[in-house]
Image 1 (cartoon, rainbow, N blue to C red):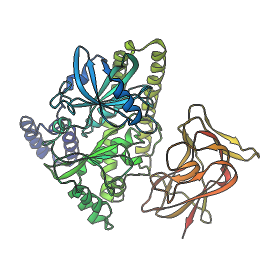
Image 2 (cartoon, rainbow, N blue to C red):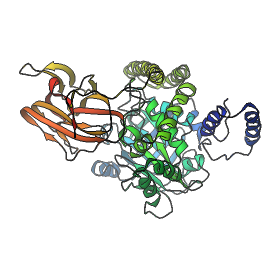
Image 3 (cartoon, one colour):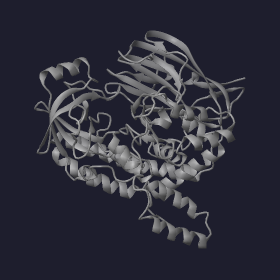
Image 4 (tube, rainbow, N blue to C red):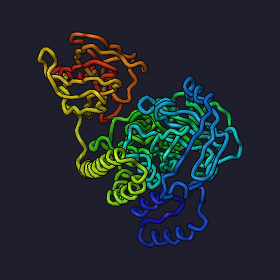
Length: 543
């Protein structure tokens, strides 16, 4: 039974109640629910402002004019706002604040194809674009289908989790054609008011940090002491699992977080909160006095169809929840529900065809050829992910890795992020030793990975690596070749560059409860090669 009362999260709650209620009680519930449709809180997951702007079948033409002084300033300080004039269709907006955005993989300078934030009201209070005070223009260099953000948004909203809307724009900067962009709604007051009874709570930005850290506050009039985050941080570190479960329900909108987590895993959002402790926002909802997680940065989805349904989680809240039996059970139920009722491959494919027809006319011949290829590949990955999820949900739970004399050789390695101008392959090292090889391109953060299920305990991941002419990247703490475990901070950065003969590497870590763990052998470099010996990649149980 699908009743939309109070948004998709209410749908989920009704669905789960349906399985528990007796027929007569369930009928009464349906009658009450139908009467409630007229009076339900419209703020919860209501359509955000300017929804017609995002559902328009047009690709929005945007022309930006930044004075020479502003361009010079952005070359020097790309994150600092400068004034600009912006034309969207036939409307002109003056004194719009503009700065560059993007992380390591997607950042481009002002003279390239930069990602941009446009704040219409910062320098001109009250000014907005169709009710939007802020938008982001993402260059989508890591998603040449340009569709991942829109797909992710649609699926999160269907799961009952607020997410900024997305559409597309053809962008010009100072008369120079930049090309197609993904246009995203900002995490603004109007976004929050569109999804919550009150949009005046604290909003925190999560990027490479967790609730136990001092997260920067994006907005909110209350005290900036992080008290709301500290309450959740205290709950996730509670050692008594029964008490932890109770405290999580007090500090966290638990129902929404379970949906948030299930959706991230379902779409393989490998750079999101649960899998990477990255790309998320947290909103303190004043009405419930609980924290709500919001998704962000969804340009890399459906990368690995066989991503485990219980992966190694980097986000502390996800880990803490899965370590409790009620949390783990609720998560698996929700993932099953979303797979059955939200993740509809035929529906997504039809939408992708419609969006592709909307986008393709504004592309040149070369762009259109790449676009068609990438959209086709994304469709295939989506179908494969749906199939793998069905298989995993139907299969008996996997058993932990078996050790022989406290040692287990690691197999089932797969390549991640093969760089432009480089290569990942199984190949012999210069001395003939069978190895996992990585040859760097100009900007490489590539790796070989293996996922294993481990019982609680302490472990050491061991490897042996050889390097040739490895030149480190100009950014980042880790340099050259190294090993690590996903979601576990290393005790110190690694620094293995230049020419090195076979060198032993190790990484110790602890597993608090049975789970899948991803081990990584990687190369971060601008040049050179690394070989990881296949016979030396192993896990050791520690006493």
